[in-house]
Length: 259
Image 1: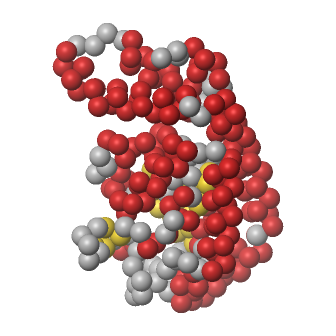
Image 2 (image 1 turned 90 degrees about the vertical axis):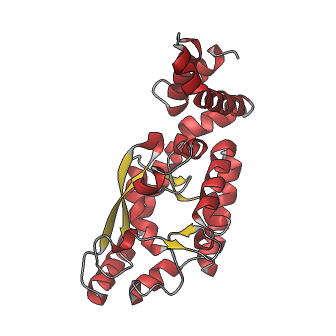
């Protein structure tokens, strides 16, 4: 593979530049026989991802490395200013409806597997630790939400249906921890149990909305979230982001798959 063009296309310090440099170093650095055996799967994975990237073209690389972040910052900043009155009203309604803080904070795993604090409006009764529970479906798959969850408050049920509870994550977008569109940010205890192939979702910033959300939202078991997130990572482009944005508006208006 010709590494030089990739190093030139990727801005210094960007995710792509880091990935290319790391993969290049892994491919040419001398390794012991034991290291070769242990890293065979990881080596194959890096090479496969770079081959996927090589087919995407310079236009898509420029969008992913530069344009996408600029759009995130501009849109999130404007939205946060415009929506401030609504956010204040929702915060007051939450405080009046049940005891506890209006904002719920939780550690999630972001790009490069770095942990960060995600912000959401609290939708459940305030019981620290209880919100981390997950549920087994009839098919034997784990799901992070269930319908008619008794822990969800009256206001919480309404703002979940309209996805208003996610709006504080605009702060995460401005801080560079999230993107407007990307994979779902997952909990550390779930990421610890990932198989190696699942970590591909951490090559990009997690999103406020994403491919998983427009393909089923809370109705999907957790393993299918990962499949859809990886599909997004491998096919990210401005066309796909625009498609996701349009479908997100339709789904939020109709309240599909949200509970």
